[in-house]
Figure 1 (cartoon, chains in turn orange, brown):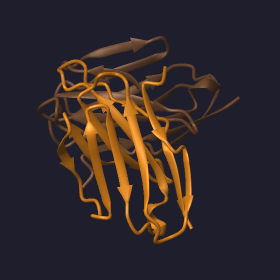
Figure 2 (cartoon, rainbow over the protein chains, first blue to last red):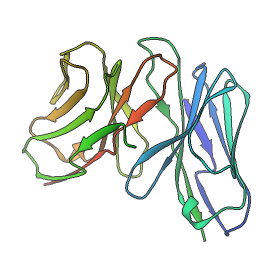
Figure 3 (cartoon, rainbow over the protein chains, first blue to last red):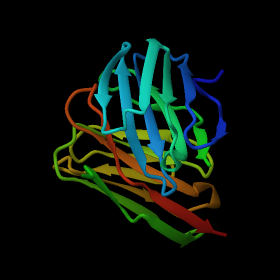
Length: 114
Length: 112
């Protein structure tokens, strides 16, 4: 049973295209996140949703738009892809309850923009 | 700017040697977590420290949280090739809805 799943696992696309990455968690958590990991392994938070409400919105180009249709899903849509968007994108989830804030990461989506 | 500093960025050790990675925050943290990411994998939670001066052990791994709750360390005794990966600390300030501030990670290579 996969706790946090992401699709697709790999995404190769041309500059200027629009693409979406999907994330689903079956842990019953109320908080979900998107992280971007660059080639030097730096994990940078992009967005966080709690009960479908946006609570963290880091300095991310507005070409990136998250959408949470329900607590178990958090999708990421990227418009007009640029070379610098190439990275691994991780979805994660956690429960906003003291002592249970462990973040569970999905397997990642490896995005390559050509 | 970077909220949690982590050093070193890279560490290469011979199998059997010890390894330590350090994290430092400019502000007091409510808790700190450690994650391990194997090559090609995703970060996996190792442990959370909450109390000032807390020390926790997991087999060959020892985690410490400083008295001022501003720094933390992970020490691995007698490294094995299975310890290869990137180790991240992540500190939280304030409420449980607050973001985790991830360190840049330490990439550990273990030579057999």
